Length: 161
Image (cartoon, rainbow, N blue to C red; front, side, top):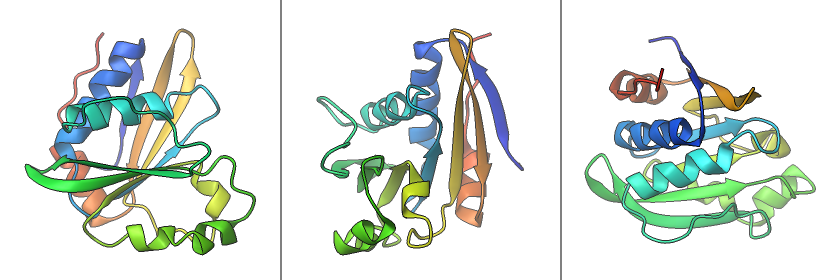
């Protein structure tokens, strides 16, 4: 599967995609979320984390830059680390904070605003592009590694038509 494209008609569609993605995740994945403010990056991540077993609030770590969650990935306990790099001033801040250590082949790392750490982020396994389209959003998932391709092959999602 080269890539996945869909139109999500509403917030429920975004939540359904997040849940489907949680079931397709594999340990060690790095997922980069792309999209303007309000495109649904945090909503997608929240749905993914709740579907993976997190109970409680999920907010974008805009000020802390990262937030770890202990959930199930591929049926086993795992860490998902949610990054929001929007307020980061330079790629060096990412390195200085020690965040690169989270990309260790076991954790799943989900990164909002990855362009803020260009040059220091490890390469992603999956790019997720979200674009506001009317009252919904368009989404495209593009794998960039064998792990990302495996994730897309496992993805079972039928958009609400």
